[in-house]
Picture 1 (cartoon, protein in one colour):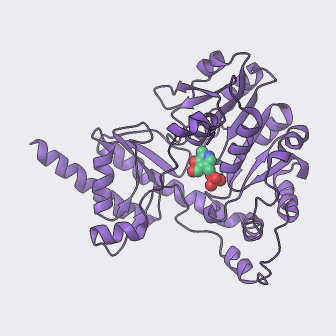
Picture 2: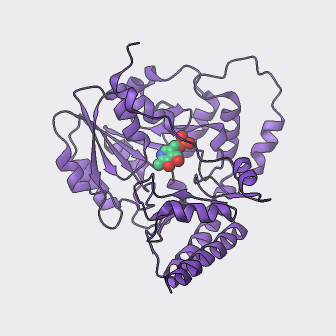
Picture 3: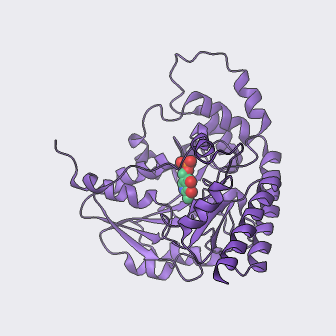
Length: 368
Ligand SMILES: Cc1ncc(COP(=O)(O)O)c(C=O)c1O
């Protein structure tokens, strides 16, 4: 078959072990998964109520324009409904952008290390992925990224706050960057963790969308809204950009239950605010622990923290898993001595911190 050459060297996304697999393997009764930056508090109770009222007419296709959700979202964000593109998760919008703008002969600039789907899609579409190392404090090196742009650059990816470091781009730096990027290069600003941000010098992305015609902002209902299983993400850009991108979109890409769930969730901002607060409290526990045990970490504006244990990340991952906590090893994320931990509920955080203490004690004892 006439496969694209680049496909033959790619592997499919490897999901982590399921909770049931880990329970069986280690004979554990309870497993806590803090690996995928999901919301440990679930989603708004109003979502469950709304889904229970769904009348069961599943034979019909969804509203392809997601009209009701689109208008609710536009109203919430104070943008026009035509400025929104909805996706089956923001993953799908990344794919749509890549499909629309990348091809052999073009290149795309991104940080290294950042969310893996930018590079994955670039490879599938045959474009050169130019990866610019993060600065030593885990931030995008915007100057180096600017220098990497040439006449064949089509898309620049910014992840702020960045996965897996949790760091963010300040308003001043972002503004200077956007002013310097050529107008025929699309800047994608992935804000999957936007709702968790507490930094005061963070920018207002919606304002920037109205100022820069080559900017698209991506957000998702998978994180603080706790609706990862519903697969709904969205992009915000100017109308012309959205109109050009829309033909790439699958006609019925956002399913009916997802539309109902997310529109309902949007109305419960009290839930969002309480998750944000509890996440910060949890984050502080991890900061305190790291300071007490002299572990390096990146201060995070998200619901996860990347901690350097200075030993093989897979070993830390394995130890935590055997004790009932699934986190993400830093090895596949290119931080080989770290693990990335999603901040959980108070009880989950305290449980994991105990396991972390034990691990460090055992390591210390082994050295003595
Ligand atoms: C930075 C970033 N962007 C995008 C996504 C994709 O989110 P979704 O497709 O669930 O909206 C994730 C998920 O982990 C992420 O971390």
